[in-house]
Image 1 (cartoon, rainbow, N blue to C red):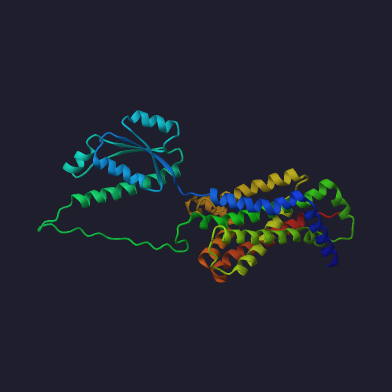
Image 2: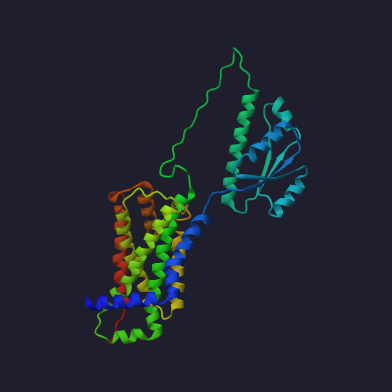
Length: 373
């Protein structure tokens, strides 16, 4: 036990002696959490929309005003030439072109119906789909107002019955996207830092030549591994603590569940990530190699974790692959506990899966570490 404590003491001294390491551990996660949580959003706002108003009537101006009143659209300018509007879209100055025909108001008054042409920049298909929904909602609301204004009631005509939908938003009643993203980004930061630091730790000893000196000492394999990885396990929990504080103070993320459950799950999860980092360091000779391999797996883990893209929207084969992704289970867990207030029973399946991964990965990592005398 004393041997392990001496190694741990040596590792902490080495970490705090390296100023660049301290910046990586403490300053970088804070900046990333603050920046990414504001930048990583799927909300579509400030949509530049241009109108080609060939009608110039009260009805067409009311339609334009309906878009102008929306917080999602920025009405850029109205043109009489569709070609001019298309040039603006080609220059990237507008996202949507709404073409109002010449007989728009006459058709509404005479035939009780009208049509408009909507051209949407669909280079980004996901954004274009959302923009189309926004346009449809505003046009539908405008159409309903037109019907109400032109509606007459007679003795032989029944009043139409309307169904009012009153939504109730659970777990995120303000529909704030940051509430959804911040816990996931916190998982990302905890995983990245502990994986990179642990994977480069033993490799650094190889490059400096100190690993060979340690191997000829009476220090046992398990003592060396525990002593080397324990400080990064502690640092992972420290990063989690800092992230939770920022999440609550800066982003006001609700924390409905048991925080001790979060720390318990994270403790097991960090064992898995540290074991994976040890496995990488055992099969690399330089820090550059370790960083490259760690980053290669991190990109795959992040994209297939459900952090940015719903797993349910992925192809079936990709959904099956995500079952081997540990970040997936941590992202699901922390959102369930913090946002839903889930208890131990609800997250037990995630806990058992991560624990099983931790046993297998650490077993392989310890087995692959060679200590020669």
